[in-house]
Amino acid sequence: MATQPIDRLRVGGDLIYRQRRPVRAWHWLNALAVIVLLMSGMMIFNAHPHLYWGQYGANHETPWLEIGSDGERGYLRVGPVTIPTTGVLGLAGGEERAFPPLVTIPSGYNLAAARQWHFFFAWLLVVPGLLFWLWGFISRHVQRDLAPTAEELRPRSLWQDVKDHARLRFHTGEAARRYNVLQKLSYVGVIFGLLPIMVLTGLTMSPGIDAAWPWLLDLFGGRQSARSIHFICAALLAGFIVVHLLMVLLAGPINELRSIITGWYRLPKERDQ
Amino acid sequence: MTLLTRRRLIGSLGAGAGGLLLSGCDRIAASPKVQDVLGLGEGLTMRAQRLVTDRTALAREFAASDMSPVFRTNGNTMPASDAYQAHAAARFADWRLELDGLVRRPQKLSLAQIRAMPARTQITRHDCVEGWSAIGKWTGLPLKLALDAAGVLPSARYVVFHCADDFDGAPYYESIDLIDAYHPQTILAWGMNDQLLSVGHGAPLRLRVERQLGYKQAKYVMRVEAVDSLARIGAGKGGYWEDSADYQWFAAI
Image 1: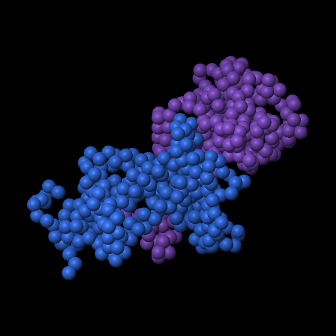
Image 2: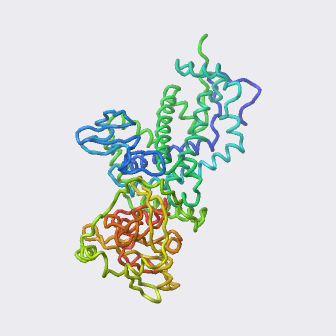
Image 3: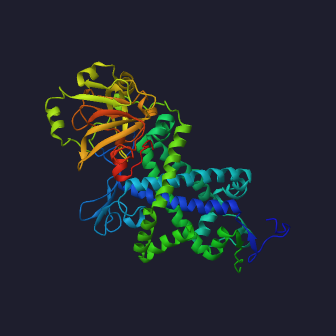
């Protein structure tokens, strides 16, 4: 920002310094951590692809979600609903595996190795994540750039942003210097919602941590509930990544990538009225 | 690197170039250097857990109404050896638990002697490394009492549990350090759910070390040995699954 005079409103076509170094560094570290965690997590899930609610849950209990195969067809079962998933989940390429080798780390069945990957990259999620939180509040990045304003949170402006997104009319010129409100809400939801819930539910699955911090079991309603919430939040994170990448593609991938790699972002030109 | 990974991931999902990615990833994953680096995480996790948690914290104990209706068996459910099967047929009448290694007074305890000693009963959750959990009631001899009877020497650092069962001829064994060995909930269980421990669940004795995962809960414990190092036991990694499949020795996570 220091290189920019602040007395002039920016217009479309201007190059602005949009992403500071800690934001960029954390973004990429975290992207790496989350992707490895998702992929190794899917291998860990494959060891027992059934989810339960409560303190306990094993083969004699009825799972609320399971991925399986009857030998000929793969399926995803959620409650009473069974969805055929042959070729993707349960059974793919002749192999009975909840998540297919293409998306798991390691690709073959190896629970011990998947756990080794998962717990290493969990450190890469937690330590830079906490530092980013700390920096975010001290530098006021959170308060200034991420927190939605009261004005933005009014139903009318929220609805306007939903309509803008649906029509793929992204902000231009001066307005594009800031994140839009849906963008802010999704970033805040990931940084202060999904990611900490992932860490806490992950810790709740540790019998050693449960002994020391039994309140975790009360917070999530038991180890098996924590495992279910861990999985649901992982699915939401995967959904966020898909939408996030889609938005990058739609908003101009070169400009967006330049901004998250170098920090510099070219404000989109104003649309002709 | 991240950019590459992500782009390659997305690209390969779409274009079906997944094979390339897979072989690349698995080549990286299998390299000893990568395994060494990932192993640093394991050590860090153990030290961090020991640092931030109370070493004597008790695992949660549940009410009888919280117990799993059916507690499934896992791993071996009937040791193959003739000696074990003869003991099982005789209801372990002539069987003795051996307690030796770095101790002043090696012990040989009958099941009757063990059951006559003070017992602890606890309803706890058993967590398999695969992800499932079952809650059961365990009754047994606190390991501390057995170790005190034998008089553990100051040079001992670990306690090894030698078991009667095997996988393809490799005997099952497990080990814990003295922090867990002296923990009040660490017991040699001879009873489960108000009955004598069944063969399927590890008769005559099963280790319960409640702050760790299921594979540490060694069944069919025949011998308890105090040692100063795990290097000379099995393949040296401290347990059957640790040796054979690289499972983490510190199984509290």
